[in-house]
Length: 89
Image (tube, rainbow, N blue to C red):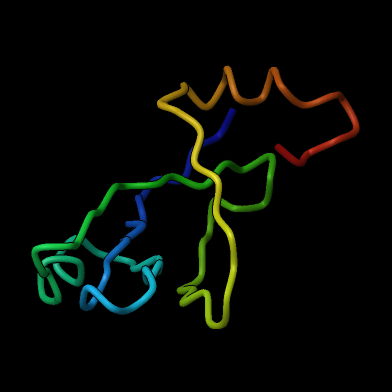
């Protein structure tokens, strides 16, 4: 398994009590800290070479989406959930 050399950071925040959560991926911890609010949560994420995600572009997740977080789990254990030809978790 080939993990990306540099992490990106997934950031979850809720700008105010009446708004929806906002999810984004940013390239540096400095960018996470610049916009930190009491509702901000951040975590490093590493792309996986076998999934073509070791080079993650900036993503703002515009529009409405649903996200499912599973873990904590070691990336190699996550690969065990995939069949040989299936690279979707």
